[in-house]
Image 1 (cartoon, helix red, strand yellow):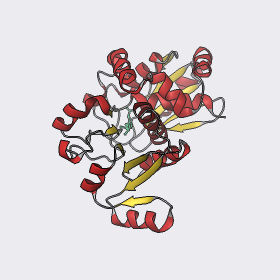
Image 2 (cartoon, helix red, strand yellow):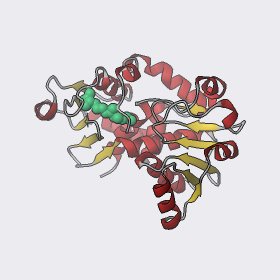
Image 3 (cartoon, rainbow, N blue to C red):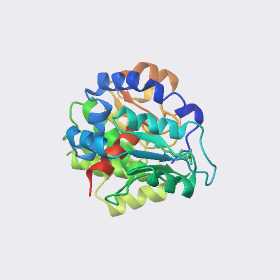
Image 4 (cartoon, protein in one colour):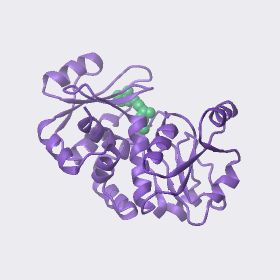
Length: 272
Ligand code: 2YH
């Protein structure tokens, strides 16, 4: 999981309405609808929870410490979806105690390795990797007009890639995987029913639907892509070159936090 930078998150809160308009233009679904689809809950269910479940966002100083504007971005996304949200004045364990004692029922907190939402009433934890995978698959499903029976190339067999593969299968899509680590790639070939691709350029040229779950930036150019490619790209930084993004932007879903956080919220409300 790539550590986000202040520049990735500092304008998220104030630009959410515009972000959502663009997202709906591409996918036919709003951020709330994507989150609810991905979590398997109705919008009514989310809105009911919004009235009764205040959210506390807790800054965490462990490891490399607080990312300026990270908590503000999370709070902004949660409020955009209709929930009451605050950032605790204290961080870490003191912040956690503060968040709960001030009425927080859903807590958001992240260190360098894990980013979770915790519903303290149900005990359910939603992990950002899983939520990001589900949310971006739901968005790609909208962009594609349904992924059922369609081949989807998943780049990267890490936690986000593998969670995307599971959810793609649940939607009756046909995921194939390309993993550059030869040990992982051989393991998948020997121990799963997944089709494994080995060469990036030919695979990119062949598949119309791509899910990029790699942390690598700037490695996919215009000429690498299928002319009608649609791409879900949760990885930071963006895997496309600037030129490729300029050409394909109407069919690219990419954000640092919005879809993942919205889906975490819907998941933590919905399960349990
Ligand atoms: O940067 C991260 C995660 N990689 C976010 C992943 C989103 N897809 N976590 C940063 C930790 C935040 C910091 N501890 C804080 O500000 O509280």
